[in-house]
Amino acid sequence: MPALLLFVMLTACAASPQDLSGKMFTFPQETDTARVMLNISTHNLKAVTVCLRSFTDLKRIHGLFSLATPSSDNGVLIIRNIDKVDLRVNDQRVDYVVDYELNTWHSICSTWDSESGLGQLWFNGKPLVRKFTSKSQIDKPLVTLGQEQDSYGGKFDIKQSFVGMMTDVHMWNYVLSSCEIQNYVGNLNFTPGNVLNWKALTFEKTGNVLIENKQLTCH
Image (cartoon, rainbow, N blue to C red; front, side, top):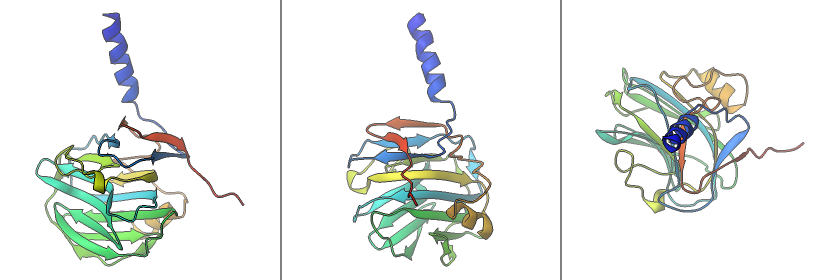
């Protein structure tokens, strides 16, 4: 009984939201196991904004944000593909050609709403063209960082894994305004995500993933 009680207490602690302000996830090696699963309380989404910052030296394809549903491996997927960043919503893909410099921080935001079906990518504060993706809502979302889900919660491919650092992951259940996105990119005052909030994040790490202090530029 004491051992069971300890397990329950540890599980409860692990599931508690954590303030990751000033922190980053470091994925230090190429694997098909290391990942961070993010807990989402909502069961359906009719609109989405996702923002994150990433740093890598990978030249190959790699997933940045993977949201899967029982009916769609790519419910919302942001994936870098050589000289492009792809946005996929309910398996519908649109491509954006960007100047993706290695070994530097990039801020990436994507928006989508089911009413219009339009998705859009923002790269380092620059809005790219709005493109049609899907009008279907997103049900029972499951989010993974570090790996790209090729099935609901699994089937990871080592050659699509992320190696590098990631921070400031936020997600909203509505389309953020242009000013709010630019405030996020500029580290100014913005409304934290109401679906995923880096300052109150519930997550589970698997494999070799580190939580480290964010590396800042000194002046």
